[in-house]
Image (cartoon, rainbow, N blue to C red):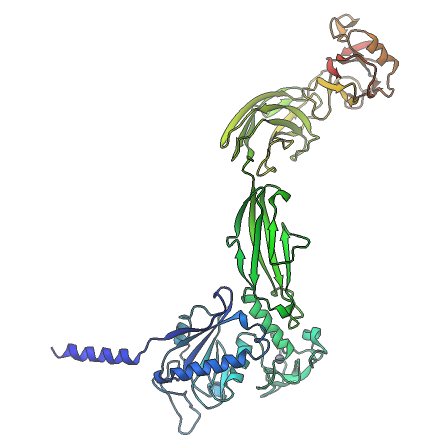
Length: 628
Ligand SMILES: [Zn+2]
């Protein structure tokens, strides 16, 4: 029964000594996401010495931000401290006689690795755990060791004593941990025989080629003796903080610190709108803006880009976006600010340039969004001139009702559609409500001149962009078909853009124009067969009897005579000739503007003559409507 009070007493005593770590943000310039966050721990401070720790941190920070390049970029850092009290003050001095050992939280000790002034902590796992209590850290942590004997060392942690050289030691160690810099002093070794060091401020090159961009500036050249070697390694400047305490960091060292700081800190700190995804309905103007922390003395250069292209004149922190100047749909808007500090001369990774990108969706409340989610055919193999039934589904994704608009079909020899592809006609959709679809079944005849190979049937919705859409680039769909030879036919058809069916065209008499009748006679002997095309304005019945069972479906009239008189002239181009090797012929009928021909329906038909000068075949008639 006496055990429990004893246990309580022990727990209470342990709690009194094991003070919880105290986390403080001593310098706050912004969010941890947008700044380089440093964390400082203390070792060898008793609970009663917390004020001394605070003073040591303050002394160091004052010195740090009076030192270049930290002075210029002071606003890029946050500093947090984590204070955990030690039982005793100071650090272990195992190399003294007699050796000194202190009970401290991170167990700091001098003479690490046999170097008397190398002061480093030995309980790194607790130090890491404590550092993790800070709001953020960029990886390496500073440790102030409350001891007056000169010393410091950098590894995973940057460690310094707290005597008169404390600030210099910590700024030097920060050169290692933050700036990833090498020591520029040249002891204790003689001649370096290794490869080129990866650090920016020492080199095996006797000319210092690595930092040639700085040569001649601020005493930068190449000086032998660096990286713990008297010979074979070179440093940028006669003296530098990375070589001796109490002197400035050389420009090569400063540049790397600036670049690493900028690679972590975000110079763009606020953006409006805050969301990176912005929807802008036409015609509403939208202002985009941002704030940044690039020091004015560094001559920040601002540039806005829309879809990757520089916006001329958009060089301020605010940009007014006019959605009527772009297409509906998704755009990228980028703001960038570039720091032109003279402290950086080489920036291939562009860490001195910060960008912010908005994904801007421009929509139109009066627009819809047509798509063709499906297109199918009833057959896969189709003979030339044969029929195929196309089933086309058109959807309107909204928001506005679409229509009227046309759905058109084309035949292309390639998987890409162009308006010059063979036309297969159109259907007009009167109205298609938002979120509705329509299925259009339609049977079309393919051209007699279609080669026996693979073709692609395309469906195109609103080809002429009559209807305003959020995305005008998703209005086609294709399906392949396999064309087959037409058999032994004698056919003519128009092969002109946007003419369908192929036996029916029209033309304005006032404007004039041209059509291109094509003759297909694959079984005729191309070497000996002559073809003749004829024109009529008086119909196809009863036609002209040429031989028993062979009637040319043309009634002879003045237009027919006009054609015969002008064969292969400027109007009736290619109306008489030999078939080509494929048994085909191409003709061109060209009507000059305001020609004195009657209005109304006219027709063409073709006849073939064999080598015996006998008529051997006649074609179908095709119609050309002469309109006012
Ligand atoms: Zn240096």
